[in-house]
Image (tube, helix red, strand yellow):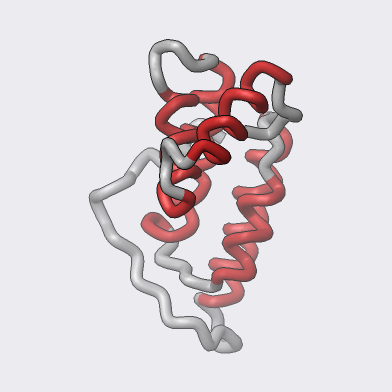
Length: 121
């Protein structure tokens, strides 16, 4: 979520994991759902929404599929507007390379599904 965990939240989620109340394979999804719930933090929900928008911009809008570049773009985001701009520029630079004669990556953009991903940057 782009921040160090608070003690209460850390204790809660490690307790859930250690008790087996949530399967390990479903743990991250449970944390995400918790962050997006009405009882979660608005800042955490916004962080996740922006992170998803970066992913959509990469994969859906630009049709890119290089996992290494995707990871770099996602890790660039730290919750700040500057990091969103940096991630978008990284994606745009990669898309331009792929779209050139030097590109060897297969791309397929999905038109009409996510027209507004990162359009506010």
